[in-house]
Image (cartoon, rainbow, N blue to C red; front, side, top):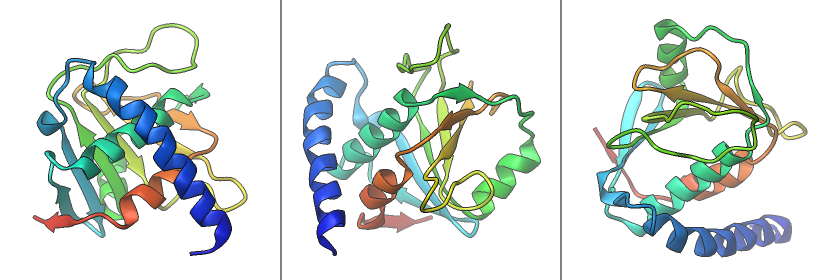
Length: 165
């Protein structure tokens, strides 16, 4: 790992150390959250009772908080299927979540979040943007656009112990 990557990872871990205690006060048990990594249509689940799960949830919710725009995009089941057939991360909560974002106005409380990790909804090295599809519980139109943060999420999920399903 190069020095820049090590520094970014250390900053992320410090940030997660700050966020994790706040998350535990939200009334939601991490063990009730389902975390799935899709790789070429195959599902790999992260044990919900692990410390790693809390890190992934914190990273995803930080991405959500940094959303800058609600896209005028109709979301179809076919589109969601295509995202899941590539590489994507899905978080399913036990019920609607009050997640904070910088967007003006009120956003419906999501039950599921789907984050593509490759493909047309993901920027490249110079444009590390990502789109978050929100489910209420069905995925609906108006996904959120986040200008940066994808690399930090990828760094968190790359070295985890995923169980194949």
